[in-house]
Amino acid sequence: MVDQKKAAEAIKMLLEAVGEDTNREGLRDTPARIARMYEEVLSGMEEDPGEHLKKSFTAEGSGIVLEKDITFYSLCEHHLMPFFGKAHVAYIPNGKVVGLSKLARCVEVYARRLQLQERMTDQIADALMRELDCKGVCVMTEAEHTCMTMRGVKKPGSRTVNIAVRGAFEEDQKLTDHFFAMLGAGKATP
Image (cartoon, rainbow, N blue to C red; front, side, top):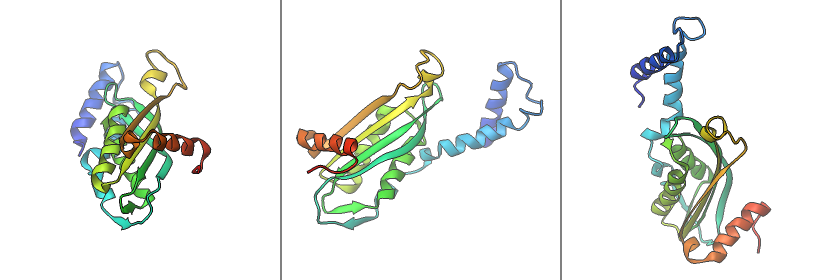
């Protein structure tokens, strides 16, 4: 839980440090607004992603379940600047599945933290393995980092890709290849 008062005081100090008048009309309410924004965008810090994965359904199938193009927004812990993109989450059930929205909720919980994309990708994969006891998991995230696109090297449009494979996807390259084929084709290939 974000300490609203402390966050607002810190933002006011930052605005003063960069030479702004915090009493002018446009900035008067900014510290409180930013404190509320941080509470929203960092809400995953207080949430257990496993809670979203607990309700499962029996399933006899053993094929790949893929939820692709899950949009996420996060804050880089190095610069407190946004990074955003898509997550593609696949798993091979081991007798049970979760609702597809639960995969998106798992991504959302990890994204709404001060984060590194590499860590977030691993955390999503590990949570699925742990909570679903599935045969394998493959997670790929693609993101644009504003700490690199609007400052520093200033290379807009560049994207960072991370992949985490667990279980059967680690052991069988054909499964990982199938995952990539599913991403590219938009449908499963035989």
